[in-house]
Length: 79
Image (cartoon, rainbow, N blue to C red; front, top):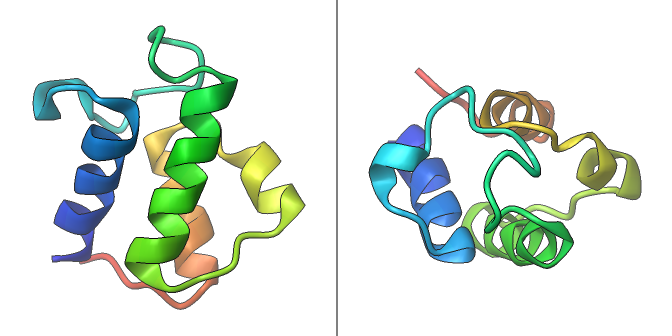
């Protein structure tokens, strides 16, 4: 369930198709995930998962897989 929510955040914040959102999706690997898209993604994640990401978390968000790890640190579980 949380993985679907995570992928939905990427789809909506970056305006991409769900097929694009894979574990290998990385910051600046697609034009939509630039600095502006990154901040939209941060806002979407904070809203969806009711967390407050630190500056270090935001800077570290380099891929979908890393974002999942950061959310785990905030108590969000993934199967």
